Amino acid sequence: TQLLEQSPQFLSIQEGENLTVYCNSSSVFSSLQWYRQEPGEGPVLLVTVVTGGEVKKLKRLTFQFGDARKDSSLHITAAQPGDTGLYLCAGHRGSNYKLTFGKGTLLTVNP
Amino acid sequence: EAQVTQNPRYLITVTGKKLTVTCSQNMNHEYMSWYRQDPGLGLRQIYYSMNVEVTDKGDVPEGYKVSRKEKRNFPLILESPSPNQTSLYFCASGRSAGGWTEAFFGQGTRLTVV
Image 1: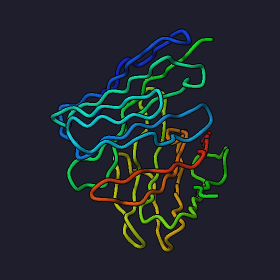
Image 2: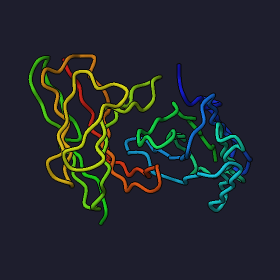
Image 3: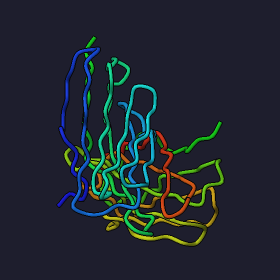
């Protein structure tokens, strides 16, 4: 059973559209992170959220941590081809430093 | 430049031939970890280390060994590789803060075991 479920698995949209991807779990996480991975590269950290209900913005990207700290979402406004990549959520539970990843959402933004 | 460096980037080997993938970081991070990434399975943690001489198993440790003799290095050892260890491997380092760690990844090592 996957601890962190990401949806959708694949998403293909046109430049300028808005989109939201989700990261859900039945477990509580002490923190959740979002990474983006491009082909042939390692994942790159985008943001860490640690407080239930927290919202963080990074230019056109908005990240939200659920009130119960079991889920998170990533919203992209006016997507651009440069946003194309695999978006991964990852979380820590309690004081354990073990970092668990979801399987990711593969986003393609077409010009 | 702050970075995590893995070597080699690509490796083809035969079943049973011991190999080591090196990982080095120049950011003085306490935390280091190894992951493998497979289609349909995502990133899975193999081993991690919170500091020198401290290592712990991740989700898929079978068939792998690690050591942390120095803070900057965290090699991954496959004593007797098998074809099911063919995968894309990533090393990561990070600074721990209040119960979580923000990971910085290397560029990956694509391993094929025939």
